[in-house]
Length: 465
Image 1 (cartoon, helix red, strand yellow):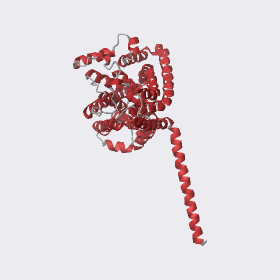
Image 2 (cartoon, rainbow, N blue to C red):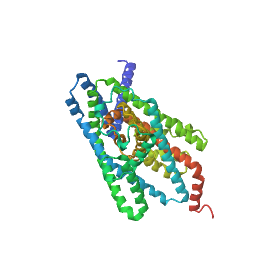
Image 3 (cartoon, rainbow, N blue to C red):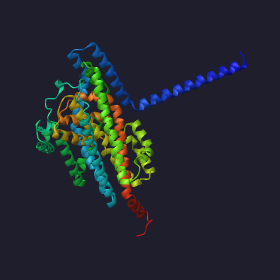
Image 4 (cartoon, rainbow, N blue to C red):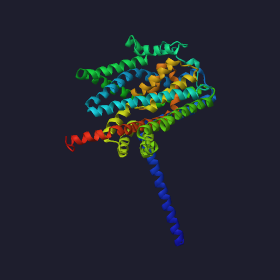
C-alpha cells in the first residue's frame, strides 16, 4: 500500500473513532436527560403506549366489558386524585395564605411593595382567566366534536351550586355567593363543594395569621399535613403514567372515530396556545410599556435564557435561580427581586389559570353542556384559586383539572386525553408564569427602586440623617 493510501486509511479510522465518540456522547446526554426527567419520560411513554394500544383496540373492536377492564387502572388514578383534592385544597391554601404573613416583617416601603405585588398577581391572574373563558367561548373548539363527548359518562350532578339551567345572571351570581358560604363545612367537604372549602380555608388561614403566636401550633399542623399530602401526591404521580396510558387506550379503543379524537385534542391545544400567546405577546408587554414606557420586547430578548430554562425544566421553582440572576442583571433592585420572584412562584400562575379555564370550558363543549353565567363564574374562580393552591405540585395539571372539573360537575374521564398534550402545554404555561413575575419586578422597581436604595444606604450609614 502506498504512503498516500496509508495516510487516507488512518484519517478514515480517526473520523470513525471521532464519530463513534460523538454518538456515545449524544447517547449519554440523552440518557442523562431521561434520568433527570424520569417522571416526564414515563408520562410521555405512557401517552405513546396509550395511543398505540388505543389504535390497535380501535381497529380490532372490543366489547364494553373489555373497555371497562382496559380503563380500570385509569379509573383508579382518577379516584386517587379525587381523594386528594379536599386535603390538598385545605392544606395548600392555608399554608399559602399564612406564608403572606412574612410581609409583616418588612418596613413601611417594603410593605407597600409587597401589597402592590399582590395586587399585580391577582389582577394578571384574573385577566388570564377571563381571557381563557373568552377565547374558548369565541373559538368553541369542542362544539363540533364527534370524537370524545359521551353523554353516558356525564356525572349525575352536572349542575353544582344548585344553579337552575335557565337562571338569570342575578340568580347565578347569588347562587355562586351561596356556594362560597356553606351552611355546613362538613357537608360541603363530603359533597366536594370546592368553592365552599376554598372559602373556609382562606378564612382559616387569615385567622391563623391574626392569632400570631397562639396560631402557630395549628399552622405547624397544616404545614405538616401539606408536606404529607405532597408526598402522597408524589407517589400518585409515579403511578400516573400507567393510569394515563389506561385512560387513553380505553377511550380511543372504545371510540369509533379515532381521527375526530385527535382533531379534538389538536383544537384544544390550538386554543390554549392562542390564549397563552395573547397573554404573553400582548397583555404582559402592554403592562410593561404602560408603566415603564420602554420596549417590552427588548426585555424579552434579554430574558431569553429564562425562557429557555422554563421550557427545559417545566418548573417555575427550578427556573427561579436563573430568573433572579437575569432580573437583577437587567437592573432591577435586588430587594425587589427577592420580594417578587419567590412570591410569584407560589402565587402568580397566569398561564396555569388560563389553561384550567380553557380545559373546563372545552370539556363542557365536548359533552354539549351549556354552562350558565354562574357556572362560568365558578370555573373562573376555581381556576384562579386552583392554580395558586397547586403551586409546586409535580404534574400539577392533573390535580388542578380535577379540582376545576369537580367544582363544575364535569366528567373526570376526559382528563386522560387532555394530558396527551399537557406535557407540551405545561412548558408554555411555565414561560408565561416566569416572565409575568419578572415583568412585575421591573414595574415595581420603576416606582420603588430609589426609595429602597436610600433605605439600604441609611442602614449602612452611607447617608447622614
